[in-house]
Image 1 (cartoon, rainbow, N blue to C red):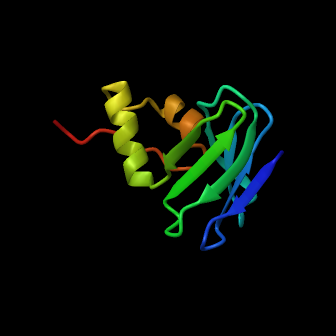
Image 2: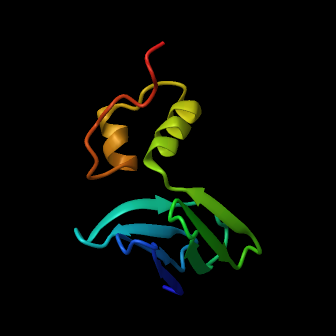
Length: 107
């Protein structure tokens, strides 16, 4: 692990990993909340925005990625990507430890 950062409120920890993925952790529960994938090289750094709603990652692939970690935004993004509600199994895969709810608003 090369980089670590705490969110401004201290509730989350982000880690930059050798495998090109970043991990978000719930500090109080000591549980993994999410894995951020998209880089093609080893990560070197991770940082939270001052408001704590965005994580920036950078690494050997010479790119910086910004991740909106606002739960409401994540739900909308999942709906847009899948084009449907996630199944309970998909929900657990992508949002472990979070109670299941419909991803997309009723049409």
